[in-house]
Length: 369
Image (cartoon, rainbow, N blue to C red):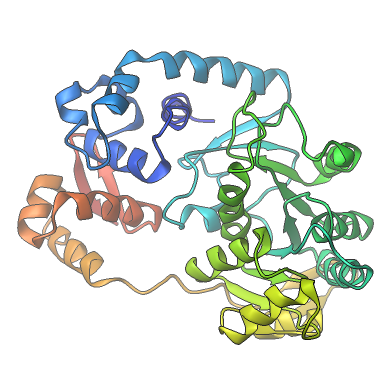
């Protein structure tokens, strides 16, 4: 935890303030703490920040709530990791609406190994559970982090198989770590927390709300290199996760099923719409991802594929970097010389910081790295 975790968590706890708007505020005000130190007339200049949100920020009640939450985390063995911490999952940091702060229970280093998500329907068939078990066992035995949502059906089958194989697994939750849904999986969650990770963006005391779970799914997909849909109906959380993954430039795979089977309809549609690639065997996933494995004498598995290259620069990123080659510059100068409007420039600069292309200096100056 760094000294910006408190104000970042406080921003995350302000109602109706999402991570995208919060990042725009941070960029505009210079730092997370700078948001709380800015006058109202400055805050409302930021797109998406109206008088009500500005008043909530200046009331500073969320700072007290954040202090209480961090105390709860410390007392309960929970890590509060902000996107400015090295421990924050770097794969997740690149999505545009990644959480400002994550809460983690469990020792797993989320930057230390490849992650593959296995998702599907809660009403899985025996066949679907068997396939989830086979895929998760295969990946976990190679040290791949098996990621899912701890729900009934495909999710829990994948977690159980990963644990049994002795590999890492991460459960992404749609509520705070002071409770567990479904309660039936409490013992398995405790087992995951011993060697893997329970992960959420929600602080303690957050009500179990169905609306939180679709948002949770963007984290499931954002953490991984690929999403595998085992069984899915024509609508549901697994398809939401697959769509998030597609939009986040993750690889999406799906197992085909018989026409007419209710829980094959979603998979078949993903394949038909070219959102997902058809697979029938877990080795195909590694082949498609161009990942090879060798076994050392001690039995450990090593990934030897090249890391995925950083995405190419966008036209606007090139404009900013070309200008910053002349030297450090304030945001107003960057906007003037590149012709980029502030509503576009603010999130662009933040994304470039995440990618390690630029560094923000005091006084809202930026430096090319």
